[in-house]
Each structure stands twice: as C-alpha cells, then as structure tokens.
Image (cartoon, rainbow, N blue to C red; front, side):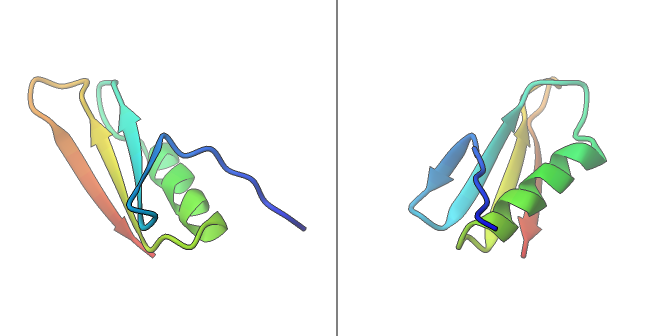
Length: 62
C-alpha cells in the first residue's frame, strides 16, 4: 500500500525537519516524525519548537 506524507521540510534529501510553535514538543510530534521517516528514505528527523523563549530541538534517528 503506497504511503504519502507531508513533512514540513526535507533537507538535502536526507533529513526531515518538522517545525513547531507551541509550549512543548509532545509525543504526537515525535510519532509524526517517526512516521515520516518510515515513509521516506530519510534516517534522521529534527523537531524544532520555536514556541518557547529558547529553541527546543529533538533529534530522531530511525
């Protein structure tokens, strides 16, 4: 069954970049990034959250 996904950004065809702007990164955000990694050939995902005074970054490796 073919899958389609819509990542916020794909960098150099190898890194999925998810951009958020909320109070914190939730488990649903990580699950979305893992799902995007499974549907693509990418092995690394970054979730960036700009919703706090300092940038919050989570790296997901699949």
